[in-house]
Length: 410
Image (cartoon, rainbow, N blue to C red; front, side, top):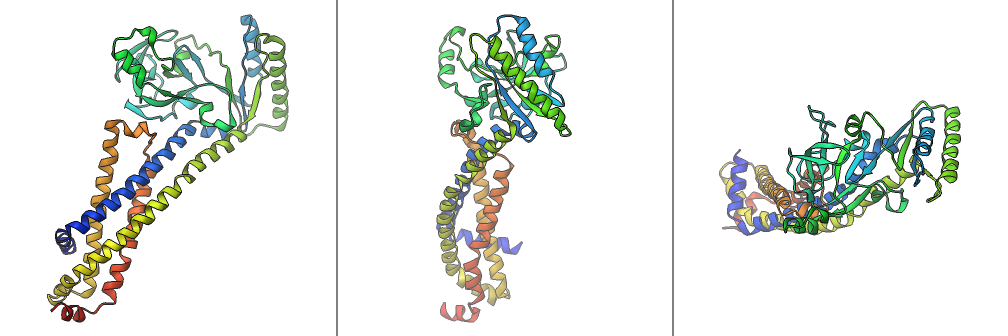
């Protein structure tokens, strides 16, 4: 405890150096967390599909326009013939984004209020939904939507965000194959100014789990335009060959019946999507490393220099402590306490600044998602700074004689 007291005393006598060191550490921690938050923003988008793309199977996209319901029924019936396979499908009906449960419950896009639902419905069977901010709704309120009925709002998306979009997979644009970027700022201002509902933003979204939608529609499945086909882990080669034949039938059926849009279905291997997503996320973290390394190098040089100057200015006080009965090695412990207090204060201040950024919407305007890796990396940075910042003080104290210090300061 006495080392902390002496460390605080050292800080009080060197306010300028302390202030400089705090600014340096805060600059590094804030920069590090902002860049990591930007990379997290990408991994959050791919996470709902991680379990899916780690399986064998395909992503299927088709664009039919059936002339009769019988044709549509026959077409979707082919998918039901697949063996040892699961169909994971989502669709959009007006503003309703009906998302397969396997994906829906893994969404974690930033929300300005509320949270992503843990269950599909409330006790009354009303779907829990996440809505876009242009509905001007609060968490806990209800919203009535065409084809579904009354829903309970669990969360509200941020004004700048990604929303689910079910389009053709594009290897060059991995994430936006399954999302669309949307900025609701202008729409919200227009609505608050008195615009009618007819001016509702085209990206208005009511996101719900497919199980909730089916429960309100006699368990009727949705008519999807794309789907994931995932194979069971123990699927046999015979079943895989059989499924290849079914997929050929699906392709031929579309060619024969989709007169308006005769686009052949695409079957993209899930392994290909996984590789693209892994590369996308990996590159997002690799791209931030140069920024962190440059800032860290500048800050650490300044921090070590500031600590060295501070130690030299304090060396006389250490000599007095030695005369008063302290061991010369205790001076190093005082220096450690000094640095620990500065780093602790800097870490808390950085956390406060990052937390306050959400009140001015800065966190999602620049695409920030803070997760546990922010904390772990921040603690690692602080530990590294502590160790490096003690190198010079250790050398000064270790190789300086207390007698020489006292004599030189007379």
